[in-house]
Image 1 (cartoon, one colour):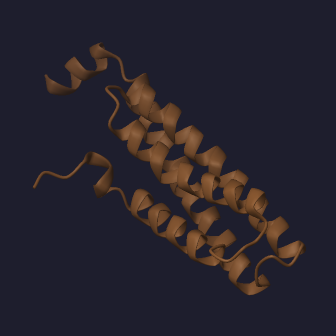
Image 2: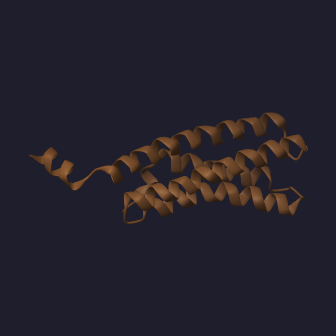
Image 3: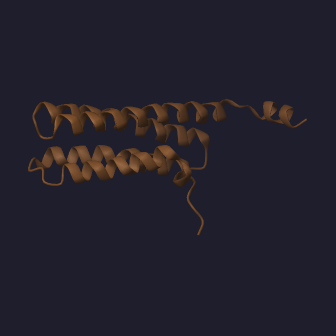
Amino acid sequence: MRKYAFEHLEVWRRSSRLVCDIYRLFNNCRDYGFKDQVTRSSLSIPSNIAEGEESSSAKDSARFLYYSKGSAGDLATQLYIAIEVELIDRDKGLSLIDETKQISAMLAALIKIRQEDVNESPVEDKAKTN
């Protein structure tokens, strides 16, 4: 069976696992508004990676990767708050924040690659093949 392009990306796999960890951690949370927000933020990360990688251009891909990176910032903020108001265990929360930061760094690197793809001109491409 053919895989989607995004399935080959480690950042997509790691962010998908992060979503599962967030869902498990907040499964019994009674603050439904907070639970909804934190799960949406986490889910947005791999979802936007997938949408961008399935788009037709490097420019679109970079745009969706920026959305993912923004969602990672949202998630980290919400996890810090969840620790502070004692919705989650401090050590577990800090571990998830660390993973979120690593994913954000991976996204930044992938954005840079996509932007380089956008900035390559057709003239440069022809020179490379000659």
